[in-house]
Image 1 (cartoon, rainbow, N blue to C red):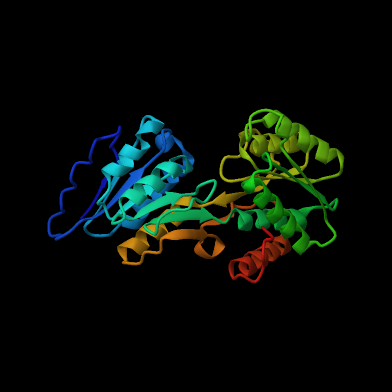
Image 2 (image 1 turned 60 degrees about the vertical axis):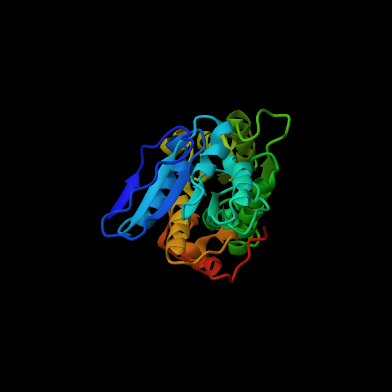
Length: 326
């Protein structure tokens, strides 16, 4: 019998002991801790969904959900699950807390989902890092396949590690499918608003690239990237988004070809399933196309030959026959 408790909240001093289901000598317990956004966060929600998928049909399994109300509660909440079979920190905002608690509890397995910077942690901590470079490479390949002007562009966040990864992946993917393509790009300037949160600059930059004949624009980097999608739509050119949060206005305007995606639920599901099976890795776990953990959202406006070519690139990248440059 599978028990999933989804209503836990606050920062309990210790989790209530999970009852052992009838007929089970032992219950496999997973504790999942969100950031303060809870399941309103798409990453936290996807991670929690992955836990449920992994335990679906697994006898003697139970997942407990904790929803801290303050960042200061992260360490205490993670500590409350020490002794469970697996404790998952569902957001990069818990990075420092989970590293500290994992070091303090070496007999408990911990997992951290999609941190911005991979931390140096103990062997009982597994870090789930998603291959943004592969997703961006596919976005670049798509842009290179569909461009008619031979000019494409990317609008990125403020030159952080993830922004450089997105740019390198996008440019290498485009140049692989079309060696002569011209690839423009710009990072959000440090002085132009809050990092990853300046859609006005993003839209302005996309319109500027459109005036330079770019007819496909990749917008990556929070609402800055979303602004770029809207700017592309306003300019009447195609656009490609990043992750799942794309501008509804851009999508409604019909510019959106696809969006690069991190499939958090699949990565978490894989990790939980491996722990259940008795396989523990620890350390950095890079999840990409081969694991079905990144990709492009459903595509539109592709001709059969274009779709086949993109599929070929996808298969080569998943098999390790291509490198992203990042």
